[in-house]
Image: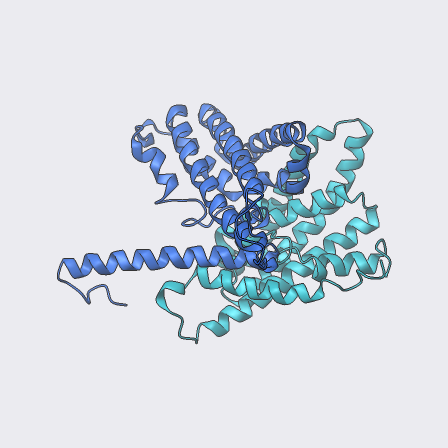
Length: 196
Length: 219
């Protein structure tokens, strides 16, 4: 696989350099909304959708800013676009599925401060991806986020039945779980790297 | 915002961020930089200082403008204010030390997405005076930096056998490379949280035993 090929970019974002488990982006929802698989999956979908919108917009904005030599406005422009995209998703979910809206609660507006989304926008700029590459990159990142949060929710659902010592309940246990997941994902590290 | 919600400055305004509401260990906010850049003490310190600077400046500005920002667009306004100061820090670090700039990478710009800063702007700065906000933000910033150093020192010590780049263990020490890699971050933070939970439970037990009502708090 060539490092610039679309397949490699997708796999790289989704699995090899998983946004959550290898790059530490989007830890807050990973710890906060991973109690149930169904909620986690919806959260993952919402995040992936915002990622896609903001990645496309960020690419267009970057072209625009580069054209006028306004690179120093990049960060502010990106975050404004992300905040609007989140607002859009929030209104859509509130209209079409009030129960889901309640289940996601405070974590829905907090997608704005999910660093994974800003991360996609910033990394695609740093790597100087073309439009199609950015699109695939954001899709891969979204898929990676869904994989990570659903796996985590699955583990935590099983853990409900286990006898965990009182002091380890909650965040400490979740972090240990995330550590083990991250260890497992390191097994993908060599994938496609040797032939690039 | 009503004037009666404003709190007076006290020692507690500063101390609350250090321990009782420590942004990392208690509130679990701003996890991404906490885990991502703490593979050495220097990186952790740089990140802590940068975040503290952004936190101080942006919450002060929010507190200054709190009567002029319309309620409907407050989150967007806060984010734009924060993004402005992060841009300043980004260029500042780039100018001061290229080495640190490259080590921290995109995580300097990702300070924008640190939920701790937005949280302080929303929960404290929007309803308090500038002076009170500054003291509180300083406490939070110091608490955040200390937490980063806690992680950074353990990870550097075990992962590379050095502290601030100076070898601590002898020649025979085999570095635990895993501590520098992503899983190490999760494990070390998990271990710190375990330690704090253990200390808290012990304190609780001693208290209940002393009051002679053991068993009331038993879970």
